[in-house]
Each structure stands twice: as structure tokens, then as C-alpha cells.
Length: 281
Length: 178
Image 1 (spheres, rainbow over the protein chains, first blue to last red):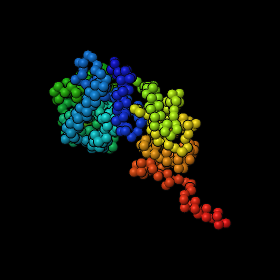
Image 2: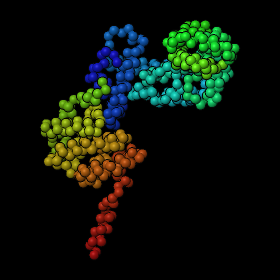
Image 3: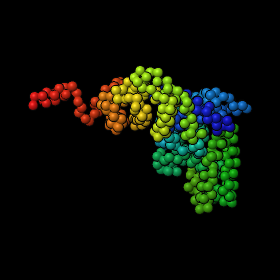
Image 4: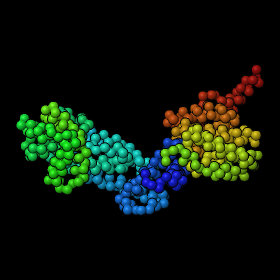
């Protein structure tokens, strides 16, 4: 947390006021767990204030009560931003038949909007985001976690929609015959396959790889170490993103999160001469 | 920041003052508290809250307990401080046992009613029977106390057939006519 918010007494006063609102005049006490949750709520808002772009240039911390109030407003702003991004996401959302992706976006996130308690529990994420992302957002919580999640899903949608829907589903079907019930990231599967095309500079509409193509890909990777492979993938991806997505740094940054695992898979399958399991179509 | 100590920083002096402020009202019932007794009760409050893992914000419950029970037929000056300490502990315990589903007023109303009418001043009976049975009902989902404010609630859960006027007269009649 920030440098000055160890002022326990100041925080206690804020928590005390929040607690009395929470108790509503009907109770004079609460459990340790409830009190700790309210303290966590106050700290979450203060952290939101500290990480707000508009406060980035502040050199002096305001009064803790003001920091909390501004932080709470920041949380409200993020919640509104999340709602806007979600509306944009589902307008043209494609789940490619994947059940956990569909349920997460169509059921779980609306439940978050319904149940999220900005005042007394902004730190609670409430829902489980079952569809896995390429990156790790476990350190985030509350609206920050869900906002980042929606941003990442939006990046995935931008990437996947560059391909025909039927093509994406064909890759997924080739990957696993019953992919609909998988709980895996489909963007990573499609990205991995696309790397084969990048290496060979083969247009996407030229589906499938033959023995000669697999050999060429093997030769491309076999003399590179794991880290060199990942570096190479990043460079390939950067060029490809620039060609097809302009300067979409957000997308590039997100897709890079999947490259470590992809690089390891490529290296392993190159050693065992079975890149057919990696580059599918 | 996550240490529990921050929860125990409420001013003891404020609590003592609040307790002593009640004396102006309770002395009409022959009940007073000295500075020492008020300090003791404030300390007992801290210990009880710690034991029950609860935190009080704002005014504590003890003044309300005092105002609710000061007209009790079963509290005298000799046992006043001890009874208050125990009522306080019982209150926090049963706020937990009832999962905070019941408001302070509802619980106090129930406690006072039982203390006077069923327990006849027996705190062990209040704690171990009346409140225990009622807490089980609340945990099971009973919410009738919200309408009644905690009044006349125990009868429907009581497991003991108690004396009432009709029963008394019947028994008296039987005894007289033997």
C-alpha cells in the first residue's frame, strides 16, 4: 500500500463510520470477520485512489478521509467503465461453442453487476471467472479483477474475429473432438496454430501442414533454446499484429502472456518430432 | 494493518463515562455504580468482546443493558455489578449464536422478558436454556421476533410446561378438595 496509510487511528475513524452505517443503528457490535472485511473495503478504496491515473502526479497525500472518498469514487468509475466495456463486449460476442466461456460471460459477469457491493465490500470479486485467460490476474480483486478480465476477453475477441468463425471452430475441433466442454483458453490454441503460419509465412486460408512444412518448422526451432524460442515468437507475433491489427499494444501485450507455454510446447514437440500436435490446421 | 490490535483501540474512558452517565437514572431504583465498578465493567466488556471475537463501534451495549434491566425485581445493589457483567457477556455470546440476525433491541427485549418471567433472575437458566433454545430457532430460520420485537417469543419454543393462572387454579382446587 501507499507510503502514508499506516495511520491506524485515521483508518479506524473511517472504518468506524463505515461500520456504523453498516450496522444501521440496529446493532452496536460486529464480529472480527465483519470488521476486518470493512477495513479491507476501506483499504481497497484507498488503493484505488493511489492507482488512479488522475492521481498519478499527486506528490502529497490528502487527508485519509478524502483519499478514501476519492478512492470510492474511483471504484464507482471503474464499475461504470466495466459496465460499458461489457456492453461493448456482448454486442457481438462469439463463444465458439465453448460452454465455460459462454457461462462466464453471459451468467457470471451479470451476477457480478447484480451483487457487487461498492460501499461495504468493494474488494470482493464474488464470482468465479471459470474461463481461463492467458495471463494471471489472481493478484487483482473486486471490480479491478473483473474489469481486467473483460479487457482480456475483449482482446481475445478482437484476435479471434480476424479468422472466420468456422475456421476457429475447426481448429478447436481438431484440437479436441469435444472441445465445447473443455475449460481451456481457446485464444491460446488458435494463436499456437497461427504461429505455424507465421513461421512458414503461409496464408491462413491455406489450411493444414504437410510433412515438409513440419520439417521446416522443426528446423526453424530446433536450434533455439527455450528463451530464444520465446523471443522469436514475440518478434513474429509483433510483426503479425502490426500487419493485421495496426498498433494494438493491448492485444500484443495480452497474447505475449501465452507465448511462454507455447514456446515450451513447441520445443518439446520439436524434440519428439511430433509438431502435428501443436500446429493443427 | 491486519493486526487485531487496531480493533481494541476504542477509548476506555469514553466507555466508563457512558456507564457512569446511567447512574442518574438507575439510582431511582436503588442501583448505582462507583468509578471502580464502572472501570471493572469496561474491562469486562473488553474481555467479553475479545472472547466472543466482536468489535463495538460507537456507544457500547452496556448502557442499554443497564437501562433495560435496572428495574428488574431480581437485581439489587449487592449483585448489580456482577449481573451487569454477566448480562453483557451473555449478550455478545448470543449475538454470535444468532448470527447477528437479531437486532440489539430485539435480543435485549427477549433477555429481559425471560430474566423476569421465566428465569426469575437465574442467569444460568437464561444463558443455558431460554437463550439457547431461542438461538437454535433463529439459526434454523425463525424470524417471528422481527414483528414482535422480541416479546412473547419464548412460549412457542419452551420445552417446559410452566405455571399459568388456569393451571394454578386447577391445582389449587385439587389440593383444597382432597
